[in-house]
Structures are given as C-alpha cells and as structure tokens.
Image (tube, rainbow, N blue to C red; front, side, top):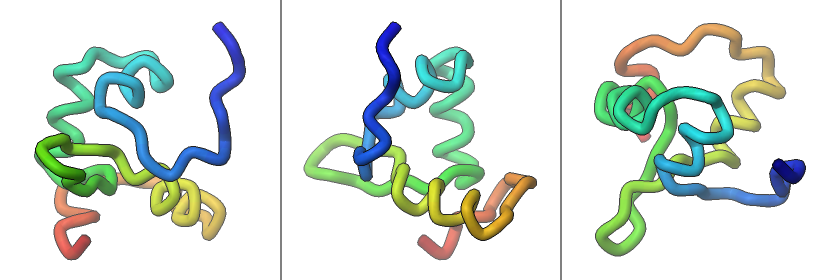
Length: 71
C-alpha cells in the first residue's frame, strides 16, 4: 500500500476505515456518533481529515461520542 496523501482535507468513510484498519461499519458508527469530524458533500458523508489532523496536532488524544456534535 502506498503512503497516504497528507494533503487531503476530506476522504470517504470507506477510505478512512481502510487507512485506520477498522471495518467500514465501525467507521460509520464513529461518524454517526460524532466521534470523528465529518461533513456532508453533495449526497456523501466525508471524514474531515483537516479538522481531525488539526485536533491531533493540538494534542487531542481521546475521542468520545459527541465530540464533534457542534461541527
């Protein structure tokens, strides 16, 4: 597998699951539970990698249900 492009701001839930090594169903649960940041683009729910990366860079280490309810 090639190295992921760190310049990506958004990715599909399926791609995010593959990058994290979890099932698509688990990644969908994270999005639905607002554990990870996401946004709707047309008819697709996308993981907001830019927001996730920024929070990780600020030191965020725990992700809980509802963390991104305000996004």
